[in-house]
Image 1 (spheres, rainbow, N blue to C red):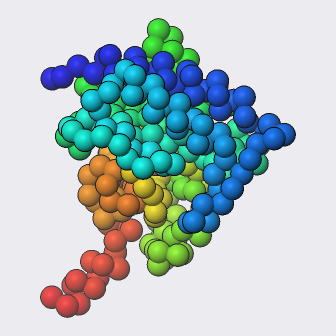
Image 2: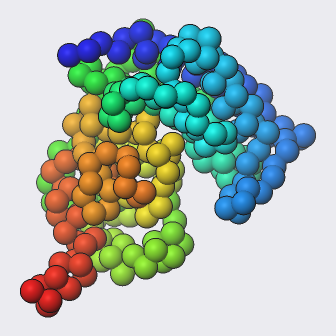
Image 3: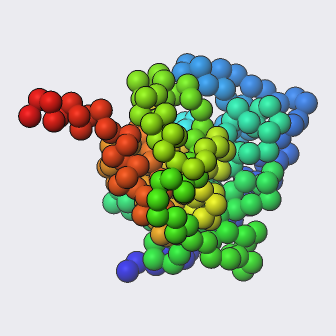
Length: 270
């Protein structure tokens, strides 16, 4: 099995640099916020953070491709870094400390390294293929994390981001069916839902509309913690445009609830 230790160390170094930059702009009086064509906000901190990541990767990994949220993809080849400079921009611009930088390495299309750094929370999570999932302030000060062992949806805690996206995608009935089945629901939102899942504090989380940069870094952390990450229709990995993550044990039951209409429709037409 290939070792990604050097790549993970680099991700930590870059994470430290972006933490400093983003924290210096968090709650800054002169923070500039604009609206992108998709009507989502972007701040000067988002753009500066992604440019910092790209600059460091050009210097240290010049042969690797890079894809991010704010700028066009660059490079070609089997290795691609994926960056979300500030996941949770709406929180960031309103002074809510739940935001993070997401950095992932994909090799041959598979996420093999993931780092999520949330400096305003004082938290960081990371994983590389085959080495487990970890949280802590640094590589030398870390504890290993694992998903929960909850085995019934009726005992499960489910986290999401908002109701609006589910309704816009026509998935609100499926979403509500799941929420009525589980023990507890909370909208921790964004990366935070998935990191709580990896730590075993949440058992299920899902979102109806996501991009690769929203998901790539989450996948190694969740899977190395023993969890499972798919699209809402069960496609493994971060390429389906939406996400369902779980402690693995609950995954099939959750997929069945979310896709019950499709199954019933197939039965009627069979």
